[in-house]
Amino acid sequence: MRSSPRHAILFCSAIAAVATSWTATSWPATSSAAQVQVVRPRATALLDGKSFEGWEGNLDVFRIEDGAIVGGSATQPVPRNEYLCTEKQYANFELRLKFKVLGKNPNAGIQIRSERVAGSNEMIGHQADVGQVYWGCLYDERRHKLLAGPPVQEQGKLYKKNDWNQYVIRCQGRRIQLWLNGRRTVDYTEPDASIPQRGVIGLQIHGGPPSEAWYKEITIGELPD
Image (cartoon, rainbow, N blue to C red):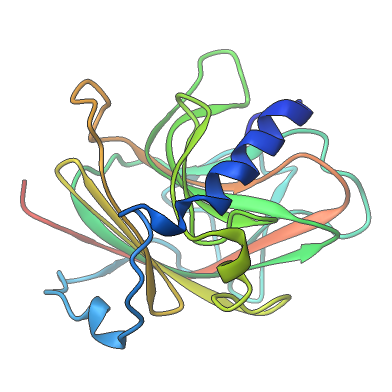
């Protein structure tokens, strides 16, 4: 999620923002599985499970294991944020993937419609967040703020610790929707028309103590403009 170093004030503010989002329209309160019954585009696999074809990034940090992309280390600290990115850019799409995070208080995320910061390891763009108190949340690495998502007290009901979870990420125009394990957690419309609606997809492992982020079964279906 956030860029390092983390500042305690910003961290506490972000937690407060998530905690109060229960009453906001950004947290859909309905629980019906029918929420994901939308027209699905034809999907294309982004990962062959054997190679990094179609991806670019720091391969000293990312590896392929058991058909999944793995970022980080279970035994060594992760020095800084790292991202493995698609070579292709996407605008309107439905992205599906499975993921899990391992370690002490791990943090990761999926960048969408994003771009690398020149001369830096960082990225800017929206992120479907993973871990800590940000499960199912939408974060903005461009403006460094939490945009929408479930309150902290509800997040424990949404994910499986140390196990595989699934994200469905749907972007069409300025609308971004997230589903975590079949539960819609975000339905957000970006108010700033200047924010790019096209970019790469990036898989993050956040800098910090020893931790790993695993990603597999990544597919994307492009939607009409």
